[in-house]
Length: 103
Image 1 (cartoon, rainbow, N blue to C red):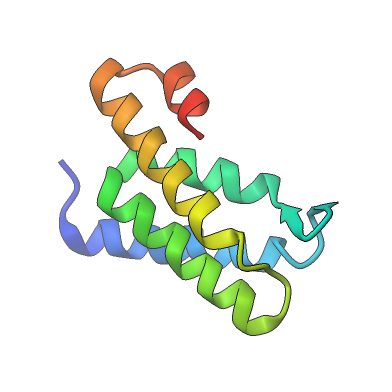
Image 2: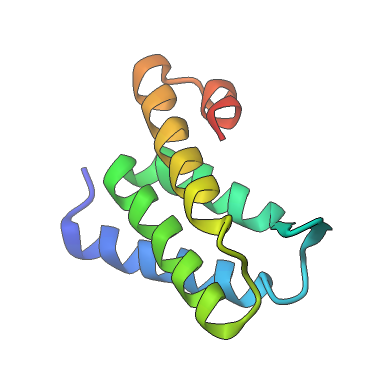
């Protein structure tokens, strides 16, 4: 089991990498922007660290992206609900396939 300091550090690193890549890897879709790296980060955090860390990471990236002007308001519900669903499905099934489906 990973200690809380390592979990926080890993969450911060994933948040930083996701935020950095969001400025140049995205798919415009009307008012929203699709960030494939955010989806990957949500599943990765959900599987490795659990639901609380996954939702926190998704929330932090959404705030940073919106503050820097690279995100949209749709970042909050999409990423946070997706991270939570991925974590719950992984916890229930222990299957990476279901975690990806949740996202």
